[in-house]
Image (cartoon, helix red, strand yellow):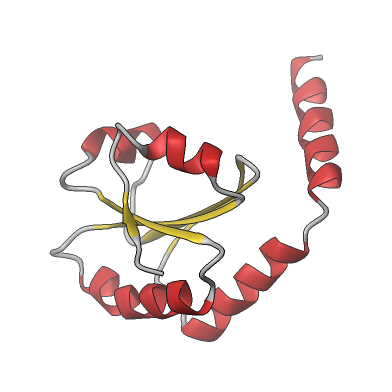
Length: 124
């Protein structure tokens, strides 16, 4: 599957309409971003049921600011609209495959319970 280009206009819709979304925040001038691009693209071919998306931080500065992107590449992973992972750095292919496996294996009902519990304790 080819990667999807995300913008402010389609970001929320993409995350809401897909079970799992991996997002690569990148820029054309970034060497590590260029090194990670084929790893990300290869993973998208191996996992056609997952949405692989890219955000050009130069073109989509509002999105980069919205998510506090301070270093690129930054990879974010959403499952069932829950942000599960957000870390800067270019991942080697085996690490990215492991991360995808971990995301697939999560019990999302338990994740939602933990998120709710954390939100409740933060407000009390």
